Image (cartoon, rainbow over all chains, first blue to last red):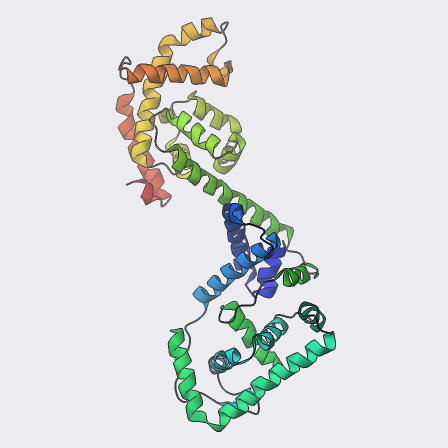
Length: 168
Length: 219
């Protein structure tokens, strides 16, 4: 049941929901497998995992609690930390993450998803140690961003509100 | 920077699709090489069983679209959809929690639909997604054709060495149904003496289907 494990361990679904989404995934695979063409882009297993990921994303979007309204009194980053409620932190991250290079972003997301530096290094064709350094630097960039944002709180609050409005 | 908090929120953004993690062959291979605690046998069995049901339902739905609505005996209609869906009688029996022979007898018309408990017919109707107004037509056709078959059963038995109807082959039964259907088309069949039982039967069936919450089949 690798799909079920993927949904539980990688997509953070509760086990009973993972069961349902896994079945849904297989049903989608069953009905769409004739449309799958191995054009060298991805293996069949990868295609199946992509379906599972998309279904899990749909699930999270539907089941997540309402986003808290973003206001100007958002707690601002301090020493690389965003104080206050988690929604503020998330909003800040939504603003800052796209500013990183796609490689930095991927490294951060892969690490967040518990992939090892060795695995990340293999995918990027770099050494494990280099992957570790790049991850550290990507975090530093976010930390620097946090400090920059702190120096101009009004701009930050406005930017976060803008992003919040876009997400509504 | 608090890495733990960052990672938790990155995971949340990735889970919600705000920043989608690309699923690559390499990532999947890495994931498959990991050792996780396998789900319990109970979870596995439940998943397989639910998936089987969903696949059967999808196959029946597709078959229903292909077969369309034909005015044939109820059992023959069930049979044609089942065969189109590439399901066995055992599959259907499993869904109905009945013995395989029950499905066989329904399909062959050995049991008239109105002699079957409405709850059992309701299970079939829900499984095969047949609207009640169509069921009424199918049941009427069943009664008329069964009545016609009574007329030439003796002759059919003689033609097949006196073999009893429940032991004749499927092909012979189908041929007799087809002959009766042809006679019906030509208007050479008398109305079944049981036709007045159809309406009360359909009323009971509607109640059963309503109790299953499938009001969509009542329209």
